[in-house]
Length: 346
Ligand SMILES: NC(=O)c1ccc[n+]([C@@H]2O[C@H](COP(=O)([O-])OP(=O)(O)OC[C@H]3O[C@@H](n4cnc5c(N)ncnc54)[C@H](O)[C@@H]3O)[C@@H](O)[C@H]2O)c1
Image (cartoon, rainbow, N blue to C red):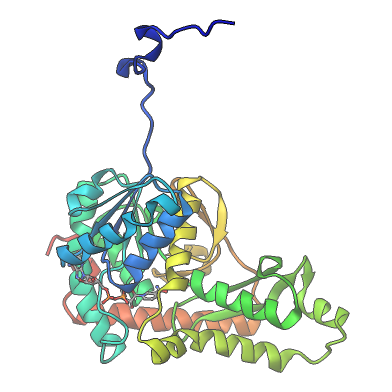
């Protein structure tokens, strides 16, 4: 049999005008310190973004991360990674903000708030001006206060301004419960809601393992008096971040993975339920604030915030948590970085 030789027409590249325009998923990461660079790495490994742009006031640092990440491309996914500026976020589907002061360097939470708010104010305004149709995903702390402020500063709909909230705390809680009861974390359904901080609320009353209410599951294991153990798990979850910071100065693997999980839900239009920080529904009568409740995440951002059944003490704890977040917003007002003033363009 003779092999047919290819003529020029066979080997010519497909004509450009015949190619369909394909949307390239782009993710911007602003702030390439511990959290930003880890998020970039987790994103590269996940393969869900075709383009990742890294932005930092320290351009050299961003460029260094780009070189390092490109070295991982052959072993992960073909991804266009580059260092850029805020204008490069104009076509980003999601812009993640991790700029701020490192947790280890802030003297107090309020110091951190003041410094990070001052940084975020300009960034958020610039990004939303360049990209009025994208989604902002905030990780900088205190995340609930700053996501609320970012919503006001940006003028974007609340559905497209999302804080990482208690996604990380929920994963810490689920893992601890999973370890205690000998199941995979994926089979534990339990949420941490409210503030990403000391006033966070573990929702134990509706927690389930493999579809069975937690109390009933404990009963099946012959464990009848688990209240104290579950309380310890909730306390350990609350203290987990600080424990890591005391040990190594910062936390970044957990939050990097949580951010990528949220980005995945957005880029893949998953309708995934995650405890992100978003505008609390008016029906909860807690006033205007952002904190975490289970919410459906899809291509448009937060599609719907869900109401979680709570017992009386959980309701009380959630009110206390709302109060704590609002106190920080009030502090922002006093620091003349008021989100309300920003609305007037001050
Ligand atoms: N939400 C969470 O669960 C969670 C978890 C961990 C850390 N954090 C928060 O994330 C933030 C970052 O933490 P980190 O450990 O990565 O800090 P880091 O100091 O390592 O990184 C901060 C980066 O932001 C950059 N930056 C500062 N101002 C900027 C600007 N105007 N434009 C661009 N880049 C700028 C800095 O150059 C630095 O590279 C902090 O606010 C921290 O509290 C949140």
